[in-house]
Length: 624
Image (cartoon, rainbow, N blue to C red):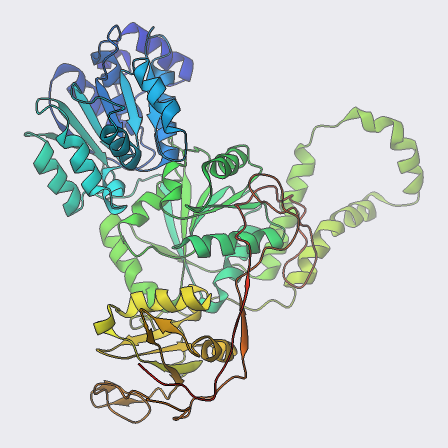
């Protein structure tokens, strides 16, 4: 294996490398740095998150630009504010001995005037998010017409986030003879299109196989009923007392909801998503890096800027709509040569998606069981014993020992140990002694079945369908959003041409019917009725009728719909004490919801303030 000296880096960079504690280059650095130093070429580098890509393009750029010139010569585009700041800070650390170097980060959520002032001072390297960069170019606050080197970092994620047009506009304003270096974890068609348009005969290097997950991460999945997903998450946390993890949810709403539930149950958790201000995001990330937060619940977009080497677990609370996103998620752990575990909590309806992910990452998922209560009690007890055994004695306690010894004078060593550990053990034992088995048997399931029994829950007819722009997934997301339900609370969604069907548990029936009393979507009333789940010859029909065009009601209550006499909906309102900045809650409790936790919950995202809304039921209404 070569050393950094062998790669051809100059003395200033080698001194910085020594200060940073880097010993040997990673595979992507070993492959990319010599090419970029020795040749004026375009490059496509495929490597997983956490493999050292920033240094792979950062060192060559710093060595090749003219530090004595104030002209902007290097442009690095990244998908998120966090990643933009991370790259800028690393570039500054790499160039700490390059006198006169000015690296400027340009991103939304911060003063554009201050950023423009920094650029005007002479920024040889700009690290930017596409949206803010395009805005500054439009305002003529930055000049990129003399760019010599452009980098697209996490290119697949930028395109996945909808930045294709911005990237195209930005690169179109740069010189044709510049070098473009594209770094990506995966290579979807959109990335190939950008490469063809803006790169000239690029060299390509691949670390591992395309889209393959890193070998330092093991992949596990846990099969549970959809309604037990949150309980499974808590058990996985309790079974790993030293967990330091990122938990991924699909939407901002689910991210906030799960984080709030964990905080209320006494876990040191926090939320990271796009609805937080930049200051709130910075506070949450600071708490996570300092381990005040042990479980960071995040959306895929927000997590792009997480650069923490010691994450022990990635937990996929919900799988992303984009299968390729799993590669980015699992790359949050197993970084810098350390090992990590990627866990997926799935219901039967999601098994097929796991098979698709296996083909992409070229790795097998191992089916594991959610631990039972007694196993968790044992793990927690031994963890406490190890912590006590390894604790350094604070001799300030010596002056209190006489009184303590007097209290336990007639207590034997064995009895004292039992009493001491019973304080912790009893909490978990009382909570878990009657806990049920959350595991379900593996087996294939159809699309979006969501529940194991075919007739579970309440079945509804709704008068919107594919002609209204819905498919089963979009309709499911729409219903989950307007009804303020969890993703797994809406299931068995069947989308037809002009109407559809869906299920919820019986407990949500009154809420669903009350909500869709006089509800309009894009100017017309949406009609929801209770129906039967009986398939007809043409597929699933409404009651015993066939699919057809869907029966529309013109007035009155009709059918077999059950009216509620008015209902009250409320979005979840955070309970507990709010702390400054991140809106975290410090709550310790020993309730029926969770065993009281000894860990302090210091972190959290900004709570969405709940609001109360009331809909009024009518005995009949006209339809448009």
